[in-house]
Amino acid sequence: MENPYLPYPVRIDDIVVETEDKNLKTFKFVFLNPEDEEKFAYTPGQFAELSVPGKGEIPIGIASSPTEKGHVTFTVNKVGLVTTHLHNMKEGDVMGIRGPLGNWYPWEEMEGKNIVIVGGGFAFTTLRSSIVYALHPDNRPKFKDIIVVYGARSPGMLLYKDELAEWEKRDDIHMHITVDATDDPDWKYNTGFVPAVTEQKVTSSENAIAIVCGPPVMIRFTQPVLEKLGFPPERIILSLENRMKCGIGMCGRCNLGDQYVCKDGPVFSLAKLKNLPPEY
Amino acid sequence: MANKVFSKDAWLEALGGLKEHYRVFLPLKDGDFFTYKPIEEAKKIHFDYDNTRLSPKGLIFPQSERMFEFSLDTQDPEANILKEAPKDDSPRAIVGVRPCDAHAVGLVRRNFDNPEYRDPWWVKHVEAATYVGLGCNAPCATCFCKSVGGGPFNEEGLDAMMVDLGDRFLVRALTEKGEEFLSRVQGGEAADEEVLKEARELAQKVTDEMPDTVPTGRLKDLPVMALFEAPFWEEVAFACLNCGTCNYLCPTCWCFDIQDEVYKTEGIRLRNWDSCMFPLFTLHGSGHNPRDQKFQRVRQRFMHKLKYYVDKYGDGVQCSGCGRCVQFCPVNIDIRRVCGLMDAYEPGA
Image (cartoon, rainbow over all chains, first blue to last red; front, side):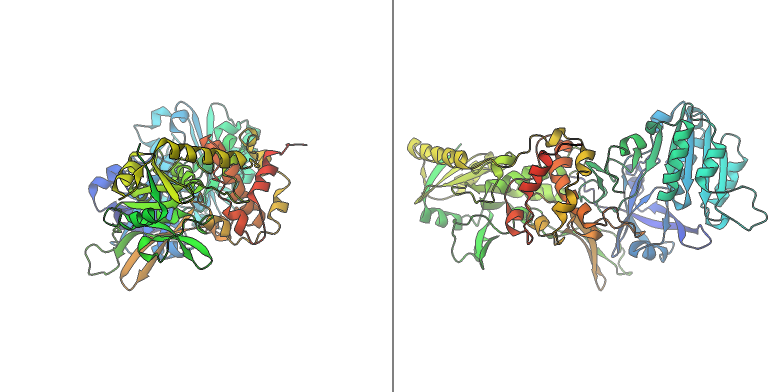
């Protein structure tokens, strides 16, 4: 019997400090047993449990795309016991990852449609995975326009700055990067909160699906903007976070009604969420 | 299936002879209550308890269970790699199980053994177990198994069933495991039709006389959000201390926590029973807590058992009517009353 609690052993291959407050780091992991990489076949939107032996496990969205072979990456905010310990670990250290877990963004449904991606702060991780995946030459023809609104508090708090700059240059993706405020005279992108920039830059909901991932306050104010644009709740897709332990719908803490965020989510349509207790 | 009748003395002696085939667990008197213990610890066996204080769920889902072991020794080439903790899954016989507690195993199975994932420890522990039940000749005032799909002589989840006939026990095999168990029990005589009839009539009488007091029929059709937003939750939760007694005593509560513990360079990952009554159960790393108020946690427990479970599996409530939470709640919160409130709720009325 497969043991769904047993993590795959991995080695930390690379660590990148993402933000100016140094609270967000991206960890690139390599599987110690190469055959585990195949077993860890994932789709953008899924998450995994990062397992630091002696400290515990944390559920984190997968930031790499399945089109990127040989490694898997996660961007981790330092908040508690496990994440703080992880932030102190070094390249070469061995730990575990367990997954992939949960569902994913509705890729099949998005085929032939415009994709509107709205992200805020450090919730951009699975959106990065999604953008890299959708821009891959094998996948790009499947989708129409890809429009991205991504905001952070300040320029130094944006994740994946090099990639953002590269995506800005491309003409097969429309990037709208914004910061809440900045005194940087060289800042060449938008200033303003994500909901406001979404209202300005996203002009149509026609044949489009919106994926929204960010802090609760951003989600709360983006939702009416999208609804005003004409997105029905079925085409507004959200990714939730709840406290988790098992990640496979057994330990019982992340439920919204009869749904587990870990197993039946983390991706839910707004239509589905409207019929579930709002305990997230 | 085989049936045997034993004089009470012969039955106790026969149980003592099972050691080479099974690890035998049964309710033993422990202070002023009964608890499941290995037969080796028995000074005297009485099959005269109402029920045990803790349900037998801990025998297959231990209150604290090792999952993995690992080394943190930097010299160890296998450091930081988790290994499954060794387990004793040799056959175990759990004897004297009340039908409600056996019924609960099936309710919990849906969580631990489903088409998507199988919990290896729970599944193997259950596979190793033979459940030998004891029919209830005198259900307690707090028992309501009959209202939730069970009954004082319900056989679901049992491999064999003991019926107390005064000076004798009738033991009936109900499954292959039960058949094997009975074949290994020394002594006894094959039951004749007269004994079987006596047992049937007893079961029928006790079942008929037991009141069916808890309505559950409307739960599945009531809209989940209407029940969630129903006005009675604050009142239901008012006296609750969030002590978690109900969770720990409940044979169908399965929630658990996972923790790592380290001594020097040796570590273990273990899981422990958890409780939805505790704020930490759902506290996010950010400090946000989706159930930070007491009434929300109380509501979660009842809604999970009496609505979410009903909706998810479409086959009744996640409660076997053992009545432990009713008996031992320090502030007298009564699931039977809450179930009645929910079942009678008229949204918008």
